[in-house]
Each structure stands twice: as C-alpha cells, then as structure tokens.
Image (cartoon, rainbow over all chains, first blue to last red; front, side, top):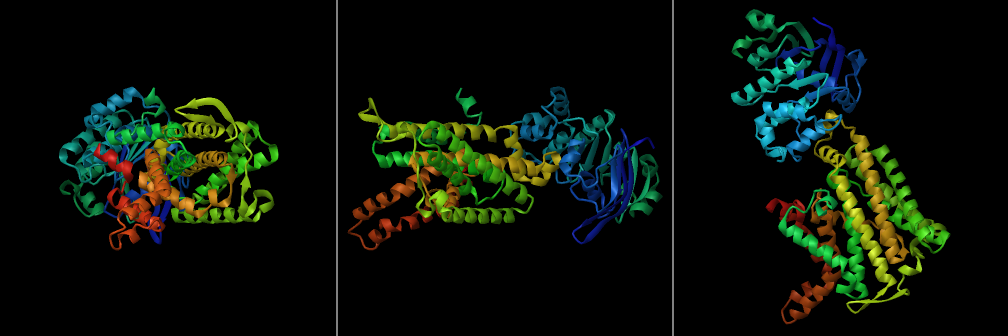
Amino acid sequence: MSDPLLSLRGVKTDIAQYHILHGVDLDVPRGQVTMLLGRNGAGKTTTLRTIMGLWQPHTGDILLDGDNIARQPPAIIARKGVALVPEDMGIFANLTVEENMTLAAVSGPIDKTRLEWIFAVFPPLRTFWKNPAGNLSGGQKQMLSTARAMIEERRLYLIDEPSKGLAPAIVSTLARALRDLKQAGATILMVEQNFKLAKALGDHAAVMDDGRIIWTGAMAELATDAGLQERLMGLSMEHA
Amino acid sequence: MVRFLLSGDGPRSLILSVIVALIFVALATAPFLFPGSRSLEVAARIAIFIVLVASYDLMLGYAGIVSFAHTVFFGLGAYGVALAGAHLGRGWGALAAGALGGTAVAVAVAFVIALFSLRVRAIFFAMITMAVASAVAVLVSQLSWLTGGEDGMNITIPRELTPAFRLDLEIFGTRVTGKILNYYLVFLCCTVLFLLLLRVVNSPFGRVLQAIRENAFRAEAVGYRVVIYRTVATCLSAGVAALAGSLFAIWLRYVGPDTTLASEIMIDILLMVVIGGMGTIWGAVVGATIFVLAQNYLQTLMQGAADATAALPLVPDLLNPDRWLLWLGVLFILSVYFFPTGIVGRLRARG
C-alpha cells in the first residue's frame, strides 16, 4: 500500500449511550479509492461521520497527512480539504442548484473549467441551475451532492452509499463521474453496498463488523474470492 | 439601477411589486399626500418598523435564530440618542454620537449574548434572550438618574428637525416644517438601512445564513463555522435595530421603557414578521405596514362599521372599537391559516 493520506488509529465513537466504533484502525492510501464494506450497522457511516467531525471520537487519532484532525470542528476539517457526500445527500433544498454549488466552493469563486467538467458529467445540473434544489429528483439530488464535493479539488472525498435507491441509469452516470474523479488522482473513501460499483471503482477494500475493521486488502482479491466474502460479510457479494 | 439597488432580489411577484411600490410612494409623499400629524406619525412608524422587522427577519428568517431581545437593541439605540442629547446638547454631532454610541453598545451586547448562548440549543438561546430583555427593561426603569426611569427622557434634537422650524416653502399647500424634515430624515435613513439589509441577505454571507437555517450540521460540514456566522448575524441585526431605535427616538423626541423596551413591542415585531413572511425581507414591508395601519386605524374602521350596523342586534357590540385587539387577533390567526408562509411567501408562490 502506498503512503496513506488518512490514518485512523484506535478510533472509538459513542452515539448517546451506544458504543458504535470499538477502535477503528484504517489506512486510506493517497490517490486511490478505498471501499468501506460491511453489514448494515457495522459502523461504516459512523466512521465517515467521525472522520468529518460530525461525531466526536472519545479516543483515538485521525491523521490527515500527519495532522491529527480528531475532535476538530467539521468546518475546520472541511477547510482542510475533506468533503463528505452524505447518505441523505445533504443538499440545501431551499437554495438553488447554483447557490448549493457556490456554497460548496469554500475557497473562492467557482472555477469555470471545473464547472464545465461537472456539467458534462451531470447535465441536469446545468438545466436546473437556477431552480431550487428541493425540486430535483432523487437522482439529480445525488448528482448535486456529488458535484458539490467535486466543485473544488479536495484532498479527501468521503462518499456514503452514492447509489442507494437510485435507478440503474443514474448509477451509471454517478459511476462515470466517480471514475473521472479517480482518474484525476483523487483520494476517495467510499461506503457502497452495490458490489458491482464497488468492484469497478475500488482499489482497496476494508471490511467492517461490529465497529472494527476486520479485513483490509486489494478490492480485486475480495471481489474474486466468494468464500472470503461469505466469511467477512455473511454473503457472497456477487449475488447481493 | 433599480436591480442594483435591490441587490437583484426584487419582490418577484406582480401583485407584490405593486403593493411595495404603493407603500414606497405613499411613504415618500406622506407629508403632502396625507397632511396631518396623525398620518405623518403612522407613516414614520411604518418606515421605522419596516427596518426593525427586517433586521429581526435577518436573525429569525435567514439565520433561524429565535431571539426575544430585539427590543433591547432597539432601546439601546433610542437611549443612546437621548443620553447624547442630554449630555452633549442640541446638535447634529450629538445625534450622530448618540446613534453610533447606542449602536456600538447594542452590537457589543449582542456579541456577548451570542457568544455565550448561541452554542446552546435554540430554545435555551430564546430563554436567555428573554431574560436579558426583562433584565434590561427593569434596569432602565430602576436607573432613573440616568434613564429617567418609567417617565423616560425628552430628547433635544437640532432645531431644524422640530415643528417650530419653518421653511418659506409650500408643497401641495403644505408648509414645509422641521417636522417634515425630520420625517424625511427618518424615511431616507430607513430606506438606506432597508437596502443595506437587502444587500446583506443577498450576499454570500446571506446565502450561508440560509444554509445554516436549513441545516446547521450540513453547513458546518461544508466548511462554515455556524457559531461565527450566527454571531455576526446577531450583531448585524442588533446594529440595525439600534439605528432604527435612534431614528424612533429622534422622531418622537422622547424615549421611555414603554416606547422601546416593552415586551408588547417584541410581540408586535414577531407578528409583523409572521404576517409579512419570514426569510423574505420584503415581508417586513408588508407585515409592518399592515400591522401599524391596523394598530392605528382598525379602531376608527370598527367605529364606522359599528355605527353603520347600529340597527342590527349583537353586531355593533362585536364591532365596538374597544374590541379592536380581539379582531387584530382574529386577523392574525386568519393570516397564519391562509398564508402560512406569510403574505409575501404566498404571493411569490403564486407568481
């Protein structure tokens, strides 16, 4: 594995009285896509939200290029170049698509070339540029949510189940966009239940269970070993 | 030019545009179109309350902060002018110093309240502001050596702004007096402050506030320090409210706890925001106008209606002018029922 951009060391997170993460150790290599897999309730989303600062870990370190960002406010973490595409899309429904995108460009005005690239990947965003984001369809909202993260070059993209509940055509569009992002050298940590998408995009995989990382390795290795999938996740992902 | 002045955020509805234009023209020509001290009094009050309500809407409608301390800022601005007049004498310099001093104190108080209480849940923040509002009202009543207590203070303003000052000029048969000059000072300042607020809510800062109102967690995750933005919004809102208070004091030439610090005024502000429409700024124009007009003319209207229906049973009793507050309440309930997004929200949705 190449030099990690992000390292989690013994991260434990509680939500109210529940212990969700029981000591997560994970390395996310620079410039590659790491898929975070596991059963429902394994702690994948909590891991992403903890990295983003939305949940505060009570112990452990989260090192972004050596800088410990554990327990820092989310806004500071975002300004350090970490973007989250949340599971619920997290768009601002009352603001227009344009305003959503402008807000996401935290370091200054939107770069026109980058915006054109985003429009090429997600054409509906150009069409509905001046419309309230709340009027978009589910797939278009997911496009907007992903585009918000892509509007600036980030050091790390945290993407939570982008294909959830979307039609296959929209999933293909998203997959294309994420492939473009990957080819541009982005570092991505992604939670995904769609194994086909995970297999197509992932370089590495980390499998979680009960708030811990129980396996890490090459995505190709996990993708080709049905027995390993069965053992780690309780089912063969090819048929999931 | 108009688009620039309105920061690209016009009324966005034909009916609303007509209503706003009518209100603007009526206020701009009030001294000549509606001669008489009562109508001028109502016009000045409408202009000042538009700014006061718009400044409150910046907090409530744009940033989603529920505060009950807005009258404190309004009062600080008013008492700033009164105290400056009392200690620095009659003059333009004293007026400016009082208005700026009152505004500075209001911003400082807002900063302290925001810094200590915006981190807590909205309900606790609202309770803290309520406590501060009560404390300040009691303090002003008790510190009679400084504030005049319950009696309040008369304010000395430059002679050019008093009724005694008369210009050798008549417009539409109305002699131009210092009172009319005073009115135009209030009107112009209110117009500038309103346009300033319109600029603020349509700036990148205003967009962040709207994002925070919709979901503070998301805004934080995108990269905006919610506490800082909310604190700045509270301070800005307090500053504008204080300037509105200064204008109110200059207009009335009097300040007392009942005119600026009373909890009834806070309720009025809330009603005006809700009636006009939260998070629209233009809602302040419509809400304040309707409410102040109702406050001042509903009784007269009801007297007329009671006289006209004198022959009928029960109806004249119901329309008795003494029951104006009841009807104002009914009007409020109806407006909330039929216009849950306020009049402006409804008109914009239709447009």
